[in-house]
Length: 583
Image (cartoon, rainbow, N blue to C red; front, side, top):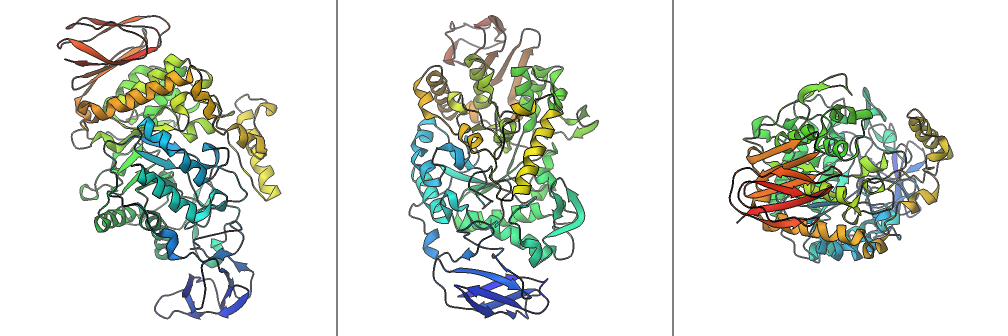
């Protein structure tokens, strides 16, 4: 087989060390900076590259790192990627996503263990599992956002074979699989890319240091590296989509941006495979051009997370007003109503948190609602709190039911965070397993310093390096057999089934959504076609006007409600929600 590596920083020689044998590599005269050699190898063969007599480093395009990101790479055979399940794909319109962290979804913390639990997600009614990052990172447990070896799968999760088994299991049950990938930074621990070439540039700086090189000299090969990694997940493992972490942090001044190039390549691969592949961005820009088609001057990503909806909902539910919640706290129900109809709260408005205007309006006439994901909780919004507390730690079951109704019947593509569906009592905290003692201590001190500035006592901040922090974050499925968890789980199942059964709840027309609310009475209601959804966030019953229309029937309600007639009002109990439709 042929081994190759892009190593323009090598001046004189590159050596392949394969199963203990050193093999000199030759320059590829047709490709600047590339070195190649033909050698006999088998699946499992260990190898790495030495540049100019330096230490043996893992392959930047390694498909497997059996001993972690600092160890040798391993050859992966084609049988790893063989599909055992015929799968036509599952498109994003009409989807309900479920964000899942492999390391805490089960106590075992492996892909195989997670695959055994997939039938419960089918019963819940979700359509796609969104896996948090899988690339290798130091130690055993972590969130995955400090991964390196962007073509490989974290070995403690089971490696590439386990991912193939997981995808087959999901597809066999009718579930799509989405993977969270990180292109905006790597490492720092275990990141050997700078030794090979200009993967990073000081032309731009990010919160993680030097930026990934997307536009400086050498960036053609860096972009090809990232594109190859992204397409490999979709092509080789058969995944259905990718979630792109923090695309606003990708510094890129080229006329054809990396994200546009990635979008075009994914669309091409989808056409070639006959599967509806898609990209979902995490973006802080509130810019509809992120998801606008390339033919209309947009970037062409297929969807994006909408944090504005989350922030408005969170503020309405909790009353919190610190940090970025300050922008939404003055009139949270009005902010929520705006995000339900116009997507972004900040669409050219002033942001007190940022100290400037922010965002751009969405063209509702041309933009389908499914391009924006709506959610009440995510790994970020839980795990970046000081104690990793979920909404269930402070809210009543009734308010959790209201949040579910707004997410699962609203116009956005809904996304749930694992355990949310039964109001999991376990936190989801920030945890790491850095093998570098200095880095581990720096992360520990940084976490304490960050929250001490907000009034938290040092002893109240979980130690990220303590294994107990990860253990506390593992789901406890036995909760589902107890109340109020079982009732909440049944409510989520009901709402997801309604979303599938009622065509109005899949209508992509943002302009067809109408919302009414009363800030002081703390109720909000919206209509989508013949479906009417109402939530009462107050601690007492409320009369909610139904507007015009014929007799109604109740499709679902958290607490018992009377069937209202034509016009009139809906008497909704405290901290409750109801979904109705016209006869």
